[in-house]
Image (cartoon, rainbow, N blue to C red; front, side, top):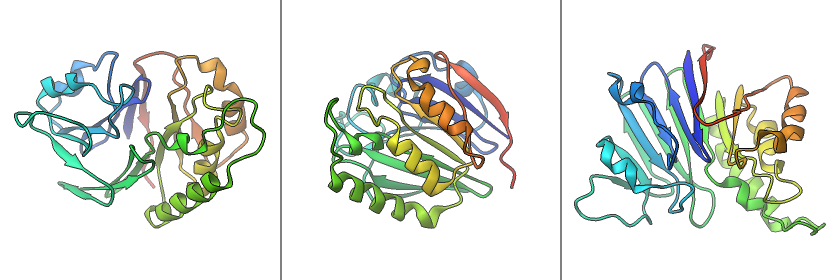
Length: 230
């Protein structure tokens, strides 16, 4: 069983039997139950941007793994990470992948669970409103990136951006992730705290039998006791 809690914007907490992973936490409330847990807690920061990083996480004095380009002081106890890095956290293995010039993605592998946190991957398909033609180069880059993740399948939990402000095809990358990687569960991020604006994506997900999409409706919306045993 796992517990997943949406914090805000790109921020999520995933609690497994082995550990607690906090991704791109910038604002909202981080419940004390995670900080007081006997399980190890790790912060992951995918890029140097206000939507992904707040220096406030330094105050928690927990292990922090952050993009190497984020500027910190020598006194800050953090681990800088980059594309291609592999982290070993007890029984857990974390692979770090580049998804944009400034952003990283994380693949977390526990013995009986795999998590794909896509960071700002959706920005690869940036297209201003009113532009009809897709940029073929971004399509190729996305396909190449998803091919790199194929060896890590099966993926149990995937989290990716579905920001309706990005383009008319705001959910194109999320759909490709679901179709290519076939995660069992999917959690949307960066939807501007307006769940109704991604209703078309949610309806589409209802038609895909291989995945269950969870839709956070508010900050600190928690989804508990999600079955992950194969």
